Length: 358
View 1 (cartoon, rainbow, N blue to C red):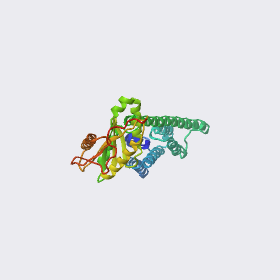
View 2 (view 1 turned 180 degrees about the vertical axis):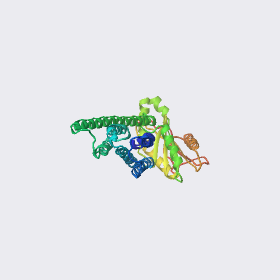
View 3 (view 1 turned 90 degrees about the horizontal axis):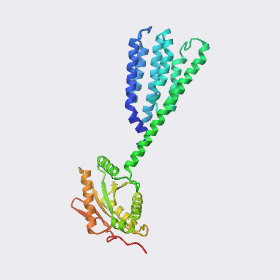
């Protein structure tokens, strides 16, 4: 998940609630304002339409940049709506001008995910509220105080926005770290059983007419390796196989299921293609030497049938693996529904685990 996707999922509901709430508040101020010197006219209707339009656009935006732009336009529309109301209040609007401006500038700082967006909207908001006003300050001698107020409010708003943005990015980074840790096998760096199973379930739900195979691999005589050469050599064997699995390329998703078992998801491949790919993998693995220790693996493959379940697929792959184990080591068997059958190319690596080289 990208930062943009995450941040929209987290903040979009709250931002939408704030937008509709501020629309209601603005309408309430119009109805309860005793200082309006003229009846509500088409200008207020246009302001209301702008608020509704930008809020709806933000809620319905399909792309992140559209959502981001709609949010900024909404704040500007809100500033224009309050500026219109203040203008309609005559001299009473002068008293409320600065409090409303400060409230707007500080109140919206948590609605922006990029500080540059907030600074741009901040400048536009001050312009809308102050530039066109006939008398934003009672006397020219107060101009330095007004400038100081604008600068102070802007700096405070920017600082709050920066803290918010940094906290959101830090939170996202921590969540991604935790997610990677929870989905990654600590030793090999491959996906763990949970992550691989979730990928399998996702692909099974979306596959349509695409072929989907699952292979379960088990290192032959792995207990013998651990008992004879030590667990450090056993770990090195696991790492060597993981490195070969990671080289399988597009169309393959790999993971460690636990212990000496690994899993591979094959997308858009026939039984023959899956068998050939596994045999080439087995050929490479059988040429490896880890601390002078040779090793091989056996594999069972199953294809997801139309209407089949992931649980059934895993069970059939497991049955095929045990069929390969019973027939000898270094075997690959594909479960077809009528039982486990040898892969298209006969394995040349059956037999016991090779002994260490001299």
